[in-house]
Image 1: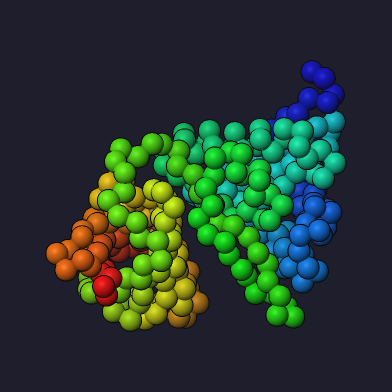
Image 2 (image 1 turned 135 degrees about the vertical axis):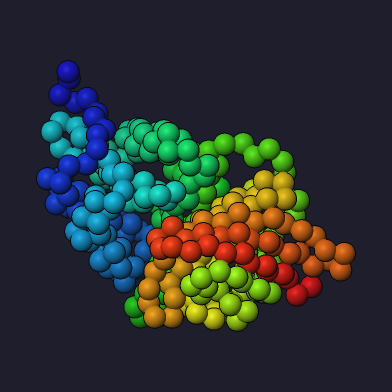
Length: 276
């Protein structure tokens, strides 16, 4: 074994402090030309040792080692790729590519059909080259009326069987009915969709939902989603749903949604429609 061989392995608990140092160093050096100080501070607080410990306990976390030093990391949490960081001195040497290959291979073994991620401004080109599609350009408010800008991106891990029957981009849906226990989505909840090819996302709020997000894809007249929402009391829960897409005679679009919580018990049936 050569001393400079790149090894990518599951993260060990003893790696976490070194990974934190790697992440902080990369943010300070690689992001400084793209973000104001207020955004850098947000990144540094967000990627805390506590968040690393949480992901270590619940997610698939990788560590890249070369010459006995940690030079990279990446995490798969459900269907979301998080915290892919490569030491600034070894960027563009293939380490990030290899981490992504391991993550995507793991995702396929888990039978995941798509992946999503949030890409920083300097990392977007890297994900473009790995066939991730930009779904939305996002702005997160930070201090002093500034923003942290990033891209919501996604990638299918399988080919859909049928082209989407409709494009939901910029369309807003309202709830007609929602049956089932612990329903937080009510007729006061509205959904605004973004769609790029087969990849579909939506943000929603209102009723008992403070904010929520759907992420998934459309295959013909069927959509598959994962949803994550925070209710008005601050509780966070998530689940999965399958939607049938109908185009009504009056031109409206109807979604017939069968949903099921994954973080608590309960499932139900929801109907959403556009106003026009």
